[in-house]
Image (tube, rainbow, N blue to C red):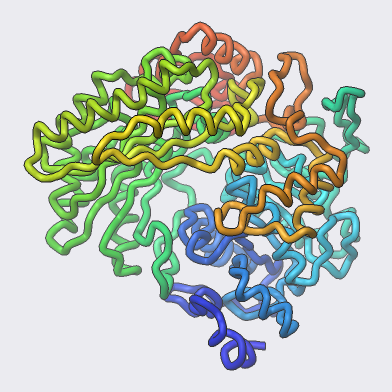
Length: 617
């Protein structure tokens, strides 16, 4: 197959380098000497998947620290897919060009709800039945993981198992269980795997619905399946595996640089944030470990930039020491340091000046809402004064471009809140003009709020497409020179909202949409909203049921069987505090707020030092 691929197929597609493998630091293990053979399948194009930190961790972990094997596969772009189908080429792994159907396990990384049609497309290209119920002993086990798996029910028909929580804590145990039970039938191997904490086997549960369409109950078919599936948690990031020699692609990828994961989790407790709930508690890597990881990564990759990654990097207790060290050691070699979007209250001009010594980039801040009232509703504990002080510091230090992140459609939002967004942008622009003789640019990215499972807003109704479009028109009606607004697609957000809080009934819709040609739904040039709506009609399912209704606190949710460690009562309390616009303090500053994670997972929170000793109980 490899010869045919290189000779006859790749010359006919855009960006053929996506499909050839052989990159620097790639790992090729002896197929016959390995125990479980797994393909890690990312349901998007190569340049997106190769930037994903979690995939890099799992790739190195399995291949370097276990007797198992892990190879990579990505979603082919439509031009490549068409030729593969015409030429009868099955989807293959990049390391050995082995067809995916020959692997024991195929694991999909579920980072975004709308990637599910790419999952089905990849299975079909691999010659594997899309429905778990139709797979036999000759087929690989299909598993999934990632943040979207915290509500796995819309995808239950397609997966043999889903791994809930942090993969480096769970995957090796799962693979070893499969190997130790390799003589058993497929169903029995899955039953054994279901006994592992964090493993969810959808076929082990029966689901019933009420007459109004809401969930009536979810019952294990036997005692072999737990009533609740508890997420897995890495207890110590310093001792957890992290790759020293990540693969270096031949082509430019998204976030094409070395990456340090400085911390995991976030203490800020923004009420809209899914990751802020499911990745609790906060855990940090020590500065000493991060210095070593930076050194080894840069030596083994040749990158000229290193990024500090987390949900809230400036909340990392060692960020100042780490940045100053990185700039001092690597700045003279032209190696820059990049930070993700910054909280406006955590902005440090000294830190920003350290970063800009090597390379000045656009500064990105995330106020999220235009008024203090609405920021209190969503628990974004920053003020206008914080933002203006950050802008003053930035423009006075030489920045001439600032990007701001906002959301529209937030709970309790009014026209005054939209006016607040425009007023903030105008004032930030005015601050920049006072400090710069050059033209300054202020950009605002406005996302549509989508209520997510396991958050305080999981009961809330989502704004309709018509409401979001009206807000977009309102915001763009006031023109401001050198202020640019960009908006997320309200139709995409609607579908994301349906799947994010959906149930098993959506499996039929997803399959129908894929059969009608839906794929790459996260890409505007391929997203076809009309096809999705036709799929809902064909399946006689109303998508508005999942997005536009306010839900009762007593309603049973499809994801309630997933134990994130955060109490539901705490989420209810936070939702009620949102209505009153009462903020909740930072738990690392104010002390434990009784969300449940510390008790449920045996975590010791050292507030003074900002450290967390997370030992799963």
